[in-house]
Every structure is written in C-alpha cells, then in structure tokens.
Amino acid sequence: MTKVTMRTYSYLFLLPAGIIYFVFYLLPTILSFFFSMTRWTLTKWDFIGFENYATFFSETSLSIGFKNTVIYAIVTCGLKVVFGLLLGAFLTSQVKFKNYLRSVVFFPTLLSTIAVGIAFSTMMHPSQGVMNKALDAIGIIGPDWLGNTKLALLSVASVDVWKGVGVATVIFIAGITAIPQEYYEALKIDGGSNWSAFRHITMPLSRPAMNSVIILAFIGGLRSFDLIWAMTKGGPGFTTDLIASIIYKQYQAGFYGLATAGNVILFICVSVLAFPLYKFLTRSEVDV
Amino acid sequence: MGRGGRQLALGVVALFISTMIFWIPFYFVIINSLKNQTQSADLSMAWPTSFHFFENYKAVLSASEHMLVRAFLNSALLTILSIGILVLVAAMAGFVLQRREGGRASSLINFLVLAGLMIPPAIVPTIWVLDGIHLFKTLTGITLVEVSLHFPFAAILYKAFVASLPREIDESAMIDGCGGGRLFFGIIFPLLKPVTSTIIVLTSINVFNDFVNPLYFFPGSANATVQLTLYNFMSRFTTSWNLLFADIVLISIPMLVLFIFFNKKIVAGMTAGAVKG
Image (cartoon, rainbow over all chains, first blue to last red; front, side, top):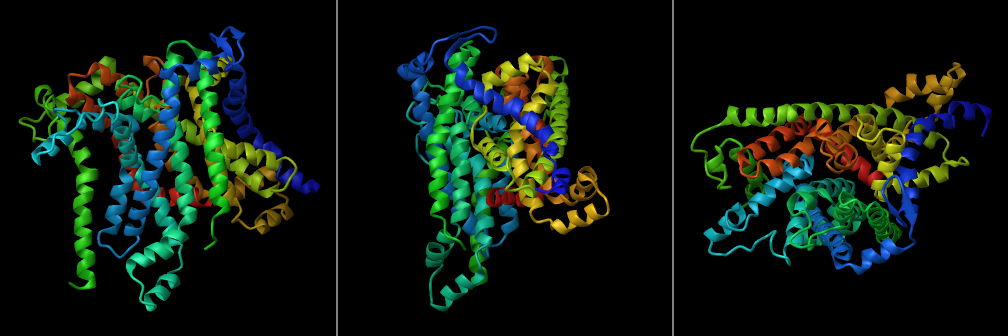
C-alpha cells in the first residue's frame, strides 16, 4: 500500500462501525462461551463447566426445543423454496395482473410478526375461528390448529410461510429474470413444452437464487422466535418451544447461564448445519 | 381459447386465490376493529351491526395513559436514529473495505462481517455489556444494538455498490488535493444514494417491526415500542378483540405507507441484497 492509499482509504473510516459492531455484537458473542459455563446472576458468576449443557440436553422440556427448531427450519425453508419457485416462475410469465399479484405476495413481509401471529391465532381458534367455520361449511370438522400437540408446530410454520414467501418469491423473480431469453427461444424452436422449459431451464438456471432463498430461510427458521411467542408461547406443553423461546423463558426465570448455553447451542446449530449447507450449495452452483 | 385468453383466465384465477389467501386476513382484522366488544368476540367475518370507528381507535390510543402514543414516538425515534447511524458508519466501512480489498486486515474483517449475517446475537451477554456501560434500558443502548445487528447486511450492500464506482473518480479527486474525508463525504457518499435508499427502506421495516430486541434490551412501560404495546395489550384486551385489532391496524399503517411509496424500491433492494450479497 502506498502512503496515498493509506491516507485516502484509511482504516480510521472503519473505526466507528468497528467499535459499535465489536462492543454490541462481537464481544457479547465471545463472552457467551464463557458465561454459558457459569451459574450467573449478571453481577456474580460461579464457573460450573458443562453443567448447563448437561441440564439442557437431559431435560426434555429444554431439549425438545432443539428438535423443534430443526423441524421448524426445515419445514419453513422447504415450503418457502417450493412456493417461492412456483410463484416466481408464475409471476415472470405473461400472466395478466402481474404487478398487482407481485405486490400482494410481497405485502405480508411488511407486517409486524406479532400482529400476524395474533391475527392468525384468532383465525385458528378451534370452534369460533374463521378457518374451521369455513371447513364446517363444506362438511369437514377442522382440527384444533394450535392446541393439538402434533399439529401446533406445523400450524405456526405455515403462518411463517404465509408471511415470508414474498421475500423468497422476489428473489426467485430476480433470478429467473436474469436467465437469457435465448434459452427459452431455442427450446421453443425444438418444440419443448412449458413444463420442459420450467424443468430444464428455469429450475437449473435459477440455482443461485434458490441457494440464497435456502440459506436465508433456513437461518431465519433456526433463529425464529416472535411468531411462536405470539401464537403459542411454546405450548401446548413444550411442543412448540424453539431454542429461541427457551432462551427467553430461561432468561425470564433468571437462569442467565442456562439461557446463554441455549444461545451457544443455537450458534452451534447454525455453524454445523447452515455453514456446510452454504458451502455445499455454492460449490455445486452452475454459472449462467 | 387463444393464448391471450388463457393468460387472462389464469390471471383471474390467480386474483381469486390471492384474495382468499392474502386479503381475507386483512379484511378480518379491519372489520373486527370496527365492531363493538360483544360482536368482535364472535371472531367472525360478519359485517358490523354498528360501526365503532372513533370509540375503538380512541380507546386504544388513550389506553394506559396514552401508552401507544408514547410507543409510536419511541419506535419512530429508534428507527430514525438507527438508520442515521447505520447509513453513516456502514457506508464509510463499505467504502474502505472495497477500496482496500486484499489489504492485510481486510480478509479478517470481511470474515467477521459475514459471520454477523449468520450467527445469532448472544442476548444475555449483550445485556451484561449494556449494563456495564450504563446503556441498558436506554434508547441509546438499543439503537446501538440495532445498528450493530444491521451492520453486516448494510456494509455488504455498500461494498458491492462501491465496486461499481470507477477508481478514476478517486484518483482525479486526489489530484485535485482531496483527502480521504473530503473524497468520501463530498464525492462518494452522494453517489451511493440508490443503495442508501434501499438500506433506509429495508432497515426501517426491520427496526420498526422488531419485537425481540426491544423485549430484551428496552423493557419497562415508559420505554414501550409499538410491537411491545401490541404484546402487552394482548393480555389486557383478551376480552376486547375489537381494541386489539384496532391496535394491529394502527401499528401497521406506517409500514403500509412506506410500501405504497417505495414498492419498487423495496423489491429492487431485496433482490440486490439477496442475489449479489
């Protein structure tokens, strides 16, 4: 680096951001590894080694969060990819009212998650809710969407998809628009159908967009908290508790060391699941 | 049926399905925010027997000594401050990171920034740090937390955008005797406007709608943000669904207005961030 470069592009420009990022994000992240091994009251701590982790994995009420979080992330991510791809392909075709439909799909993204959670939990009310009344009208007895232990997690996940599919769709729209039209024209000359265009051109060539969607949705799913908290608070029992809601419950109960251990488990989930997924996806990417 | 006819039919079907899936929840919330308490308790889609627009909305706004009004002020202040600081520090950082790419420190910094996109924040230790520097439960404290959490995304967008600005601009400014500060604030920063507006829109949605960080870092009724009032009202108004829904409508308005004005910008920003980043 020349002297001029040093002066013009000085690292001093990084300092304000660097200080804020270090103090309010990096430092707490580093400290969490230590505090997760303590019994901690914010003013005092006793070092107890891996006891918090042992507690976490030995109590069903805590470790269920680990299982639920992975299920929740996979279900929401999978559905967002499928619906996002289909909607993206549909909304880049010659269909009428395209701009309006794009706006409508994107709209829920702007809403507060808590508001969406409250609205849907009333619509999912087992006897009075709009959803079961509609099912009633066609002769089906609807389930207790949020009270049934087998169904509740999936009900919340589907609301998550309702709210988040707009982002996935927009990313797919961007990816599909970037595919050169010549490919489609060549296929049409060879007499290919719309389905084969989707299967052999749109799907493989929107891979970079799909990878972005998978990573964003998967990490978002692992970190989810507000929707579950607004809709079920982890219930019935602990059947919809996620790691993030367990962290909050332990924090509220004053178990700061245990809450921080939950946090570290969440980092490890992201590092062990999402980083390799990211590596795998970007390695097998084809250039357009 | 011709090709145009088929596209039209498909469009009409899509309009119908989108109404079912996306508009009914809105209709449900708005219509119930206008009913009286008894009728809203049915949680039905029925048309109100009598309209209670002013009573309901006034009741929500004045509940708990105008807590919602205070919350709107808090949320607006939090959003504006966070965006102001974020744009300034992230633009400076993105500029230097791009121009010094390959420099000694830059690969480590890039890794730390990228990690921030993926790794969830450590909550209780953050409270401990905030408490230690006397910023816990303060607007300054939560603003800086929001800035640090949105920094990676903003810095990466800025960095990508700076790469598209030719270095000749910098060089001619240097020849004219510009130092780093004047080059950045006088010439580069104004050129970053497109990406700055994207960041402003996306960050305001995220910060205004944020529930988790205010819940942890900004507790107390004097500090309430709009998302927390909704959450608090949820337990207080369990028998008055009309008021709860009126609150939902009120706190959704700012972002809907933003959407109407910046519809295209939001979509462009989402795609730029997700695909290039």
